[in-house]
Image (cartoon, rainbow, N blue to C red; front, side, top):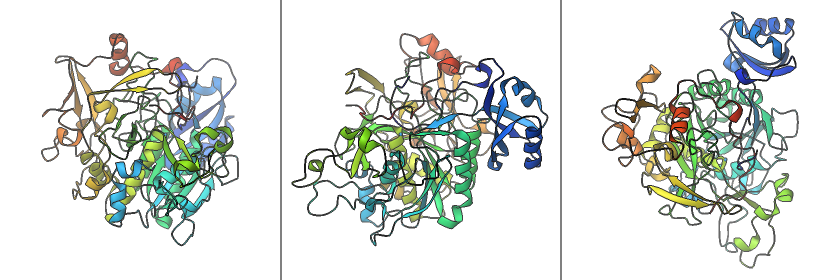
Length: 548
């Protein structure tokens, strides 16, 4: 069932333990112990497995194997983990000033020289994605799908690229009343295509694209990677192949920014939308981004969380997510001239009368609007590029730290949103598991000089049965983590309105709703997975309408 629109990777796939019976083939990703990967792959092939793709980045490979061979594959002494491969599918004019990027641009911070890898449906050539010399800033493109075409025949990737780095060539000048400029309008764009013309893809292709970005890091100075896609969480991030891949990119020096998911309205497990963060947004290394509504104004004072934005803590590992929120509702960005959207959703094409003096009425052919955490993620990816332009020595952890520490913490406790199609009204609570460390503030981050040496892994949320409160904990990772130390107390990063001088983030007053016990069990139980009730993928359907 399609719940919301956005972009996501893996819809409704079941964990292996819940797979139906039968002897038919199934697609799996097999993670091997260290050793000779080609030999290990060949050994599996000799046993009857069909190789789809080798994944040396995570010392793994994607195979098709008979379903009745699954247990035997898991029991091999050379195998560490087997998971069913997930399917992947596809989350301005008031956005850029709202996050402070317009001011940043006036100081010369435009992302010049920084490469941003966009793993999506491709990027089509467009004047908004060129330099002032009209030379394209699309410096590399490669498809990892069965299709060899490198233009964006779906339309999602070009929209994402425009949010990151559109320079408003199609909306600048005296004849325009509104300008649609991206966050970092001078970045170079690397297009790694993992979604086909219908917004579909598979997990192993995304992992291969991540590996390619790491290999190209020095060639194109790739410092940031955007993944506006995700899949339901069915295993711990420690065993999830996609999470292992994004961690490899992070450790290679690339800031990985991921959409949180569009499942904030999903109450299938009686959690009131909590614990619906999708993978790889559940990984503690990456920056996971939720979506705000700008309310159609450039001021951030009236902005509130979109009801569809997925909330934490993450399933199974209970990582405190999202890390940040950014504008993601009804965002106007570049329309792919090669994409399906202009024909399938003409109502979302931005009419020239909206931004041109004496513009013609009717659907336009330059810009398009969409909603979802898929649109919020590239806002933060662009912000990361600005920080790295100003100080190229920053590590991914330092970029994450600065963005989270300087984020605005001012939100109302509650707000409401209305679906423009169903007219259903949703009530949203602004807490740590919905807005994270707050609303990204580009200028505040640029003006921050902190460079902590420790990791900036998102903390773990731990339930204390004695006090019936939830606390944040950073020592669960077995490594040096910056949060919660004497120089960076929890309330400094997440806000005193959420953490009032202690590490307690939830107390007795916080309930899930009428189904409190069921929802509580899902989030804080010891062995809960979504199973047959897995939420629909974030990009299962695009949030074309957004909300009011």
